[in-house]
Structure formats: structure tokens, C-alpha cells
Length: 223
Length: 289
Ligand code: SF4
Ligand code: SF4
Image (cartoon, rainbow over all chains, first blue to last red; front, side, top):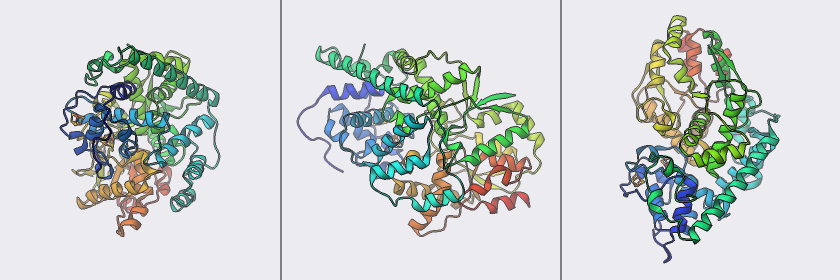
């Protein structure tokens, strides 16, 4: 396990950006470690969920975005369910990886963002998952051609994979992806403006627990 | 009784036996299912992990499609789709800014009129349960199984509003009604690794092995699941775990709908039990004997 603290800066902008993306604050965390204790992936992670939360509070952007943990989190919601302080850790993990994804930070587990990209491309092409296409495009992205060939063959033999796609609301789906990207850009610009004018770091509001009412859900930004 | 039915992508491909058995059971019980026209993927992890807004917009788009088609209550067998629907619906209810952004993203206002149900909830409704009890043709007596709920059915509880979050019993009660014995075990709500299946199968095989070994040690003859992703990891990847850890697991993994079907007297073929990669014949002969 690496050193928790690297570099000298502590940047609240990183924390508030993560909080805004998560729709939940991290300041309520009192480092009890319960989230890590129940995490099924714990032994495979470089930083435990509680360490990721703490790193975010400390503004350790590079360490968080370069961690394996943010990509290996399986979104099982155990941590979120058990946190005595109402921190929605699973969403915070999502927020951190979405930030790394948007900023194209090289991933410590590159196959995961490749899988996200391949799936997103798949949905924009077909509207639904078309597994054969997805698997092929994932192989091209990761370069790991032989992975799961044994499984693929067996699933083919049992006719568990469709050989032909169906197309469903492809244009509507693409329009959703496009509009989402546009709205997110607008929100990010609003947050940046807020931070510059100094009003965006109202971390107190963002630190309220996940069931703390709708005010909490908009995080530290765009109020 | 009639419900909207959202199968999701997996039930149209990798877990078509879940689709087939659920439909067959509903038909036998006189429950009508109607698939919304032209539904789209719920977005699953690649959507919510890259954008909270996209992760909410895709499920809400589907709910809006159902609302437009006059549907008021939808049954969602895939635990991942179920979780995405519940989360999105919960979040737009709590966060007006997110709700406004979602409306803009899908180009429509969704009135939150569609109720979201997992089939386990459906089968535990008193009226359905009564019909079910009546129609049992082949009680599952002597069948000792481990009910595996995985992560997304019960978590987080304020979102899914389904059963006990740490020790759910709905599937156990349902199968006990049908005569089966269900065991008390430690991995009921542990995660199988779900969406890491395609990218980090090493981790999946580790989790698969642990889950199966616990069920085996406590004498379960089969695992019973309610999620297509769990099924791929536990059934279809089981042979890989056996190869990797040089051990024999030989644990049949069935969908709960297949067990209901067997109890109702339907044949394995009608329930798609021939589709599994891990041989379930021990269970089939135990039930049919
Ligand atoms: S996030 Fe919650 S569970 Fe995790 S260490 Fe902090 S207070 Fe404890
Ligand atoms: S949601 Fe992620 S971090 Fe939380 S317990 Fe599950 S795998 Fe671990």
C-alpha cells in the first residue's frame, strides 16, 4: 500500500468537484473503516474505500485518480449501506472515476475504462447491448484477443449469445448521450465560476448525509 | 393480473433461460406480461460510472416509454436493471436539479407514475402466493438449496425498499413454500463482482469460488439466484474457477423462476435448464424423482 499523502497542496476544488458529481458530501466521514471492512474487493484494492474518502478530503487528486480502487469498485453498495455517517461511498467512487474518465487520466486498470467506452459506443450504435459486438470491440481496445475464448465458445454452443443485433431507438439514445454531455459541460462551467468567485466551497452543505434532503443532493456546487 | 415486463439486455441473450422460465411460470399462474415497445438498455455500470446524469437518464427514458404506453407497474427480473431503475427514480424524486437535467436529457417530463417491482416481490404478494401454493404439482421436498441475493436487490435499502438489507429472506420463504429446504449461510448478500466480469475475471473467479465453497460446506445442492450477472459469474465461469484453483466445485446454479417452474410441473426444457454451463441434472433428477 502506497503513502497516503503525496505532494504539498490540499485543494478543496477537487473535493467539491467530486462531491458535486456524487451528489453527496464526504466531510461527515469519521474514518471508522467500516466501509472497507465489508468491501468484497478490499483485498484487491490499493487504497481501501475509507482511504479514498480521506484522500478526497485532503485534496489528493493525483493519488485518487491514479488509484486502482476507483476502477475496481464493483458498485455493490455495501459501503454505502453500512456507513454510519451516511456517506454514499459507492457514488463517490463513481464520481472519482467519472472525473478520471472525462479528463482521460491514464487508468491503473485500463481495461475498465475500455469496457466503459466500448459499452457506451455499443449503446449509441444499437440502443441495447449487443454482446458479440461489445466483446469484439473490447478485445480491439485492450489488445487481449485470447481472453475468455473458452467461455465464448461454450456460450456460443449453448446459444447464449445473439449473432445478430436489433436496433432500438438509436437516434433517441444518441440524442440522450449528446444532451447529457452538453448539460454536464454547462454544470461544470457553473461550478468553475462558483469556485473562482469563492462561493463554491460551501463544503458544510455538501457534507450532510445522503438522506439529508434534496439540498444535499446538489452537492457543493450550483446553488 | 397484468404487468409491464422489462427483460433488459441480458434476458434477451446470456440469460435467456431466466426470461423463458419467468414467462413460463407467469403463464402457468395466469399472470400476463407485456414488454414495452422498443425499450433501450438501462446503461448499467458503464453509464452510472461515467456520468451520474446518464446513469439516471437511461432508466428514466425507459420509464417514460412505459408511461407513454399506459403502463403503471413494471416487473424487472434483472437485479442490475432493477437497481438502476430504483436508483434513478429515487434520485430524481429527491434532487430537483437532477430531475430537471434528466428531463432535458430525455426531452420529456416523466411523471413518476410507474411502480418498479422485482419478480420476487410479485411472487410474495398474498394473492399470487395463494395461487402458487394451489398449483404446486411437484413439491421440492428434499431439495436443499442456498438462496443467493447478491448485492443490488437489497442495497441501498432506502432506494430498493426490498426485504432486509443484510439478511433477506424473500427467496427463502418462496422456495420453502414450494417444499424446498433453504440453508443459513454467510454469502447471501456478498457481491459476485458483477460488472468486473469482462475486465477482471481473476477477481471474479476468486469471489465465485468463495461463494460456492461456503454454500457447499453447508450442504447446499444448488445455488439459487435472481440476477443474470450473478448467474454468468457463478454458473458460466464456474469451470474457469475450477481450472484456476484446481478444485471441483460442481455446484448447479438455477434461477429461482426455474425452481418455481419445476414445482409447478413444467419440464426442464420449458424452463431452459439445458442452457446452463454447469450441469444441473442432479437437481432435475432430485425434483423429478
Ligand atoms: S465513509 Fe463512512 S464507513 Fe467509511 S470510514 Fe468514513 S464514516 Fe466510516
Ligand atoms: S461499492 Fe465499491 S467500494 Fe463500496 S463495498 Fe462495494 S466494491 Fe467496495
